Image 1 (cartoon, rainbow, N blue to C red):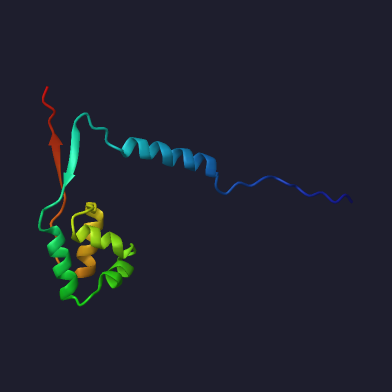
Image 2 (image 1 turned 180 degrees about the vertical axis):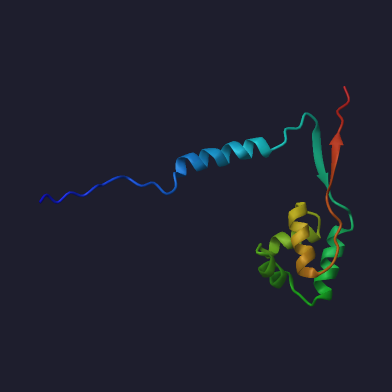
Length: 112
């Protein structure tokens, strides 16, 4: 009797195809804008963030660790040197249990 082993290739996940699909999904979901836009944050955001952090008796370092960013970034947000995106603001709201002002998108009109 012959020893016969059937060696068929079994593929559970084809990473090449799934990566191509993910890339095409990203391209589809990204909105293309014909107009120039800019994100603007409420001028009270930094003060509100600092006050909420201090009310919770948290240092920048402690809040940064809970949030998962560098404490310098929180300092820049509090002083308006950088602007967080709305997802980051939502996460801060959950951590601090408060409402913070969100970014607003404005359209820049270029005059000729």
